[in-house]
Image (cartoon, rainbow, N blue to C red; front, top):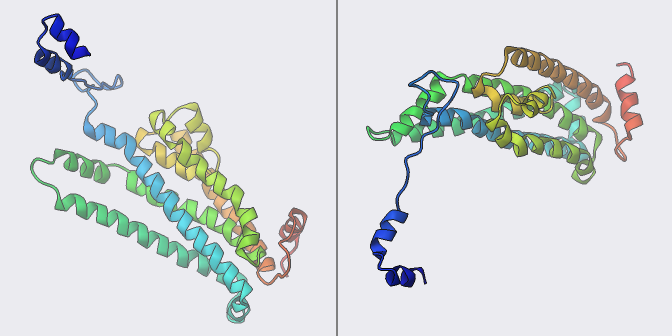
Length: 280
C-alpha cells in the first residue's frame, strides 16, 4: 500500500528505501571522564559487563559442588558407609576432607573453563580482531580474576558448610529437598538482580545487598569493575569472612551430632539444642 502511495505521489521508491536504511552514528559518552576521553570504548563496555560472566561462573560451579556434596553425604549416611569412615577419622576431619575435596574439584573445573576461554581468544586473535585484544587487556590488567578467586572460595565455604549440615541431618534426598529449597531461592536472587546491579553498581540496591553475607560474593563480584567505595570492599569482606567462619563452626557442631543420627530430620528446636550442646 505504501509503495502504491509513493508511486501515486511521484516519489522514487528506491530513494525511500535508501533513506530508510540510513543509520545515524551513535557514540556513548561517560560524563566522569575528561574532555576528549569521554567516549565509551568497547573495552569500557566489556569491563562493565564482564563481572556478570564471573557471577554466572560462581553460581554454576557452586550449584554443582554443593549439590554433589549434599547427595554424597546423604548416600554415605544412608548406606552406612559413614560409620566405616568414622572408624578411621573424626567427624571434623571427615567434614573438612569433604569440603576441601569437592572444593578442589570445583576450582579445577573453573580453571579449565577460564583456560579454554583464553586459549580460544588467543587462537582467533589476528590483526583485525581489536575487540579480542581489548578483552584480553581488560581481563589481564584488571582485578577481576583475583576478585573472582576470593569470592568463589568464600562463597563455596559458606554454602558448602550449610549444605553439609543439612546432609548430615537427612537420610534421603527427599527429606533434604524441603530444607534446601530456601537456600536455592536465596541463590537465585543475586542472579536475577545482577543486570540491574551492573547498570548501577554503586546504587542503593547494590550497596544493601553487598552487606548481606549470603549475597556478598555475587554482588561484590558484580561491582568489582566499578571500583566500589573502600568502606564497602573492606567492610563486606570482614563481614563475609567472619560469617563464613561462624557458619563452618556451627555446621561442624551439627555435622558431628547429626551424621550418625537416624530417623526423621530434627525440628528447629532440636537443631538449636545441638548447637548449644557441649562437645564431649
